[in-house]
Every structure is written in C-alpha cells, then in structure tokens.
Length: 162
Image (cartoon, rainbow, N blue to C red):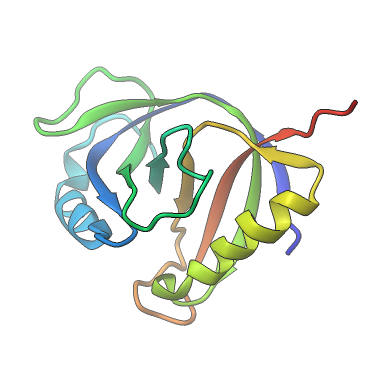
C-alpha cells in the first residue's frame, strides 16, 4: 500500500448531498439522482466526478457504522455563476492528500479503507487531517465490477515531531 502524496489546490464543486451512515448507505440513491442531471451543470472544468465525504471531527475516534456523515456527488466547475435548482456549491479547501489507487468491486472496498485507516496512517509519517475525504471514480470505474478503478484521496498532515 504505497500512496502518492499530492498537494491539492482549492476546488469549486457543484452537486448534491445526502446524510447517511455506513449502516444506512445511500450512495446508490445519491448518484442515481445526480447522474441524470449531470448535463445541467455549466462551466465544468472536466467530466471527473467526486464522491466526497464530510465527517465530524470525532468521526474516526471510535468506529460506529451508525454514525452519520455527509456524502456528496460533485463535479468541478470554473465558477459558481449558475447552479442548477436542487444542487449546491461546495468549496473544497486544498491541502495534502495521500492518494491510493483501488482496483476492484467498489462494493468490496471496505477492506482497503480498513487498511488505510488502521494500518497505513498509524505506520506512516502522516496523521489524518480534518478535511473532506473523496474518491474519483475515473474513466475505468464500473459499479459492481471487479475491474473497476478509482482513486481514494485521504487528507493528511505530517506527524508532529518532538
């Protein structure tokens, strides 16, 4: 598990959000409502989509599959000039990210996240930062397909040295 470390610039994103938990996962519903409206978004920088999570500051202190978070389906835009009805603007603040490549069925990625949070972060020279986490389901992404590919972006900061 060797991520690349990238510094992300601030991004302007537009999309929709739902509150959910791991136990009550509404990701399919979220993307099912976003994708038919994707063409309505003006000023897209690209067709890359962002599956983004906003967690409370104590979310990772103790695992609880019932704990809720916000999940967004988004696309980057050049500016917030025209936002379709029922969609919202989201400003993603830049910073340092560990970027993991994942190939496999997206519905079976839980083990990869367990490795990232339970093994890689504690043993790396980084701590988890309190900023949004996201995935970029790129051109080879296929729902429910073992050949699917995506990137997992985890916000990090260098560990403090004493």
